[in-house]
Length: 314
Image 1 (cartoon, rainbow, N blue to C red):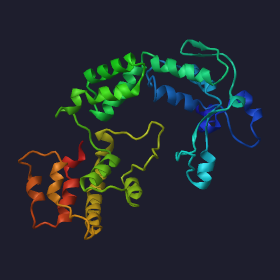
Image 2: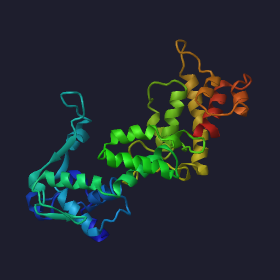
Image 3: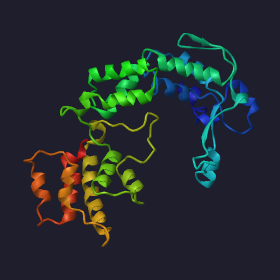
Image 4: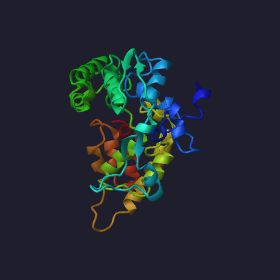
């Protein structure tokens, strides 16, 4: 598998049927993108245990030939361009000359369409596959509710997914009503990005500074740059290791001091006691006394709050 794909694992913008390579300019390395198809099956619909085979991956890869993205090269060369409506000039495109024609069979279903509708038909069927609803529901509950997703919550979202034919807006609305999300027994450890955003909100910062991206890199959570196609993990095991927690503690002191130093005469002073509005602690928690202790410098009190255990959870 690896030997077959090592020269053809390319971005969707270079996804070309193997029998159509002659139509592509010489010197450009393009070919069948099996990884693209595998990610659609494994990460976005059925899941790794959804019952697909290597043959399904290869057939789906052929279905998706000709699917590409316009505007990437221009955006890379001159910065992100904008269209006439002010939006990014980057978007999906289908190129018929690069599509590998022919009837395909994916998960036992035959697809005879000759154009972009073939891929659209396959994706609709993948979304309606019995494995997709519980897989998507599990991912959502794991991300928003708990690392160990409550089965009742997963079943509830899966039913909505099926009843609404995969309408993610309806699924998101149902997720808000999941009672397990509001239980004291379920909580999520903040990823570095979650933690940094929570810090900025807690001190009423309305804009990201130039230090945001370096801070995220230091926390091993570079913006939009995960090392694996599945993205960043969001479980406590992945972010609560000793090195990560020590890194947050050190950054908390740096951030708190910079926040205090950046205030001017027109900006209300940050009262460390105000952090109690965004930190979930009991009435007897020592943090309440600490934040009100004027003998400790305000920046140090802020740092102790945002580095403390209570602030690491949402």
